[in-house]
Length: 112
Length: 112
Image 1 (cartoon, chains in turn red, blue):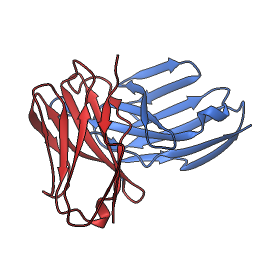
Image 2: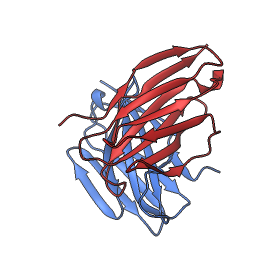
Image 3: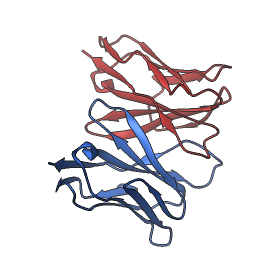
Image 4: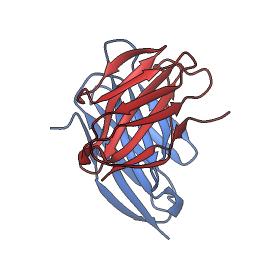
């Protein structure tokens, strides 16, 4: 079966711009969670969506937002980009959050 | 103090050696995960466990809930095992969610 697909793989943006990242989960998985990975902070939880509703949110500013569509695909948006937003953004899908996760390959965002 | 601590941070081994990576956590959990991340970013979920021991090929994961400690063992290590190994926990309470808390990872290098 197809894995978790994240697009794009690489992205370069300028400070102040906004960006939208996409995550298509494994077919049948209803939970999609997003994570940020930086050399300084490691992996940190951003938010989780389940059946189109945000079920949990990490400690990130309101510039970070997301949504989930009826087909379970999810997008995350970062507005007013800052240099510190440069990171690898990973999503993971799960049937309902009670079982194991499958991670995507990530989107590497560079803010210049 | 981080809620999930891993040791060692860096580990160099010779091919064939038995390897142990440790993880301690300070929060109540519903499950503990061991993840593998190769250069380039992609994360693979190795184990999800809530009690006892699991084995997959040359990998063994154990957890002691009372001690709040888990270990990942690699038997007969091989250079292709070189990667970052990350311990993550799913906090208990609040229903099933994907809000993982991550350790800082152990960078393993297996030399031929």
